[in-house]
Length: 259
Image (tube, rainbow, N blue to C red; front, side, top):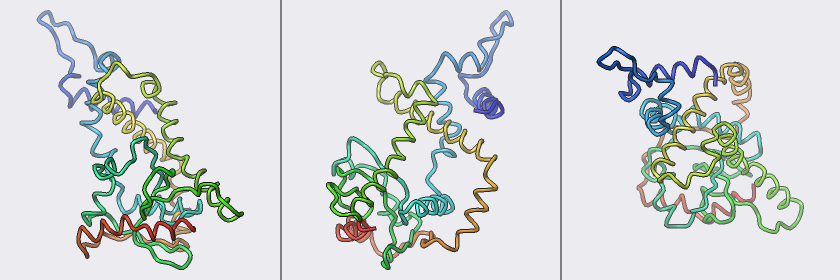
């Protein structure tokens, strides 16, 4: 990361997290500096990062964020696609306990409208592998595709879906603590380390984005009128059961699989 961003993080830790305050003993000798403590006390450091920066850098996407993401995905051939999901624990029980779709079910998520093959849809989706359920919000590849159209869809879907694997690869390349074995730590500490690394990664991306923000913003504004989607504030029409049923609509899933 850039030095200015690093110094900003150190300053916030030393000023707002008690553990990193530099103190003096009875003889007036200074304790370890925040920099020295950051190197030796990993778990205090990750907890401090989450406390100070978690709300800002682990927030839900805003309507503006969604519009930017949907624009990028549409240029890659998948209108209405937010991103990819890849998890080893993706059965029905895990999904029911996951907060991923809570905002949609509760009617507080921004409404995404897009057009595919002349059909209008009002709920964005994720690319997944074949283990996931056949819901409207999951689009899998085609197993053993037959014909050029199905083969092209499967090839493109699998290529774009690898984004989530590449994202984890970036974290591993940037933070050795994510790449190395962690059998000696409990789950809470591992979770904090992952959350802290994601926060730091997002901070670095935002800091470095300044070098090409103007170009990207110009390109997005120039092509915005060509997009086949819209992002609106959440609609509270309907009830929770209706939204849950729509989210799990198998027929819509089959239609979207013919993108």
